[in-house]
Length: 387
Image 1 (tube, rainbow, N blue to C red):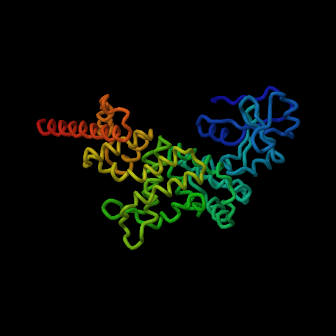
Image 2 (image 1 turned 90 degrees about the vertical axis):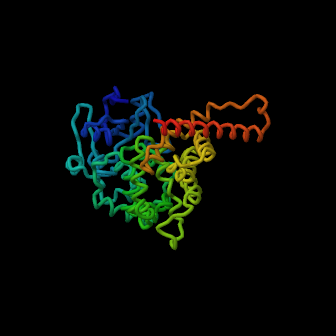
Image 3 (image 1 turned 180 degrees about the vertical axis):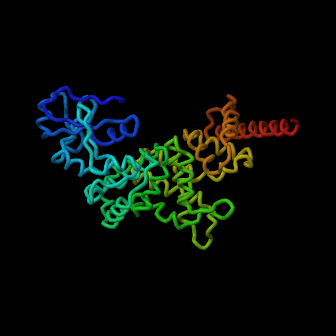
């Protein structure tokens, strides 16, 4: 939706509120429009017969595909009760702007600040909304007051009581944002990785690996790979998951992480399930952990290993996001060769006499694919040597 649709009935004051107003001030096209009205819900429903209540909250009303809620007190009081100053904005149907006292200056200064001293305590999910907005507005900085409120909410234990769907919803939006790493960075700064993202709570204190391959922490590496994968939400998720096994490395062998790819699959699945993410995400996270090391040295793999890697990724329907992650993690161009090899494998057909033999059919098809790939690799090498 690119245009806000105002209700035709004008007997009560209605305001466009929140992120849509902010985005318009920033020159961005709003993705959605939310409205608030100065009346009780029953009055609004009586004036708009097509409207209906939605969701668990009896205060949310849907009309012509847009959400409406009653103001919380006066308009000024409502703005002060919102999450962040940059969202504490309202515009009436004549285009008049109403703003929290610090909203416009914080937009101009690119600051994410709580709208009140109790903003995050009033609704702890705002911690995750802040992290998501940091991903969506990468030029903005998180105000010290926001960090202080995050730490206070974390210390209170109230993050644990947030419904998983609310945390997961904010997280999914962050995965699609321009700088998804800010999700981890913001939560880490505010001490809010636990309990929802406890798998990476210690990541800042663990070296990513030995020199010269890694110079920083696991957290810094995860954030770098997430940003390098930006544009594909599933690839960003896989980037977050690919090194989860490093958090379970025996401290005695650091900075090495031998076998971390095997240890990371279970934490990836656990994290996806805790956040109530789609089942596809659990599978993708586990696969990212298990296979990213082989993908990083793809050119050196034997035909059989290449075949098994390519077919597992392909059969999971994860070709695009997996190779995006692999390239982001390794810094090498891997996808063209992987795609060329996959075409070779998929061109192989099982002879009729080998079909419908159960396990034997699968083993024969794999053998034929490995032979075809070995031949293709040999031809390329010969062409390169001659050319």
